[in-house]
Length: 218
Image (cartoon, rainbow, N blue to C red):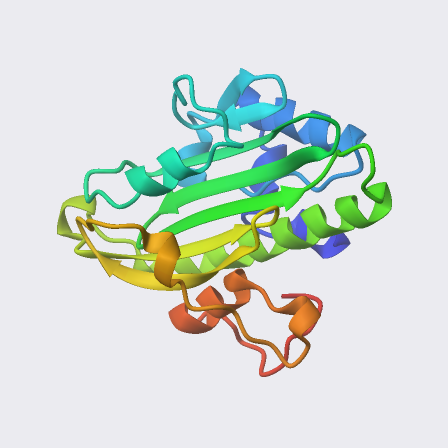
């Protein structure tokens, strides 16, 4: 994961002159042993703290990131603005997760990664979050060349990985979409099913996977 420190997206996290929120997030995540969440440059200026362990480029209203469905449903509208939201949320003793939501260019990404529960293996959870953040950085790089004027978008690639409910997959949808996009996601595939990832599937779909194998640096 060290090479992400020189990654052009992850490097935004160290550019504190453009957003105090970027620097706040970098410090908070670093203290927990976590990689700073990758933030697209175009969203960095409005990325700020929105609550305890919650950062976003827009107001999130009263919705908790743990209640992900309102965010997914919002992404089905052609008028959904580009944004990023990252945060730790949950309830009870063990139902806690790190969330990374991103609507950017032609992609809507919704990740819920189990993290911070009382009965979770802390080291494994940290490694999982860091690995997913690395994949998110690669996905942002793959999206950048495909960004278009929001008013010209007619379809969106949904990339979903909700850990607690095992809702995982990708799907292109025409906008606006009426229905539940989560009902018909195409599951990710991998030579090693334990490493199958919707983000890897999205990278292949967008042509951003330059490796023919599911190597760890993806």
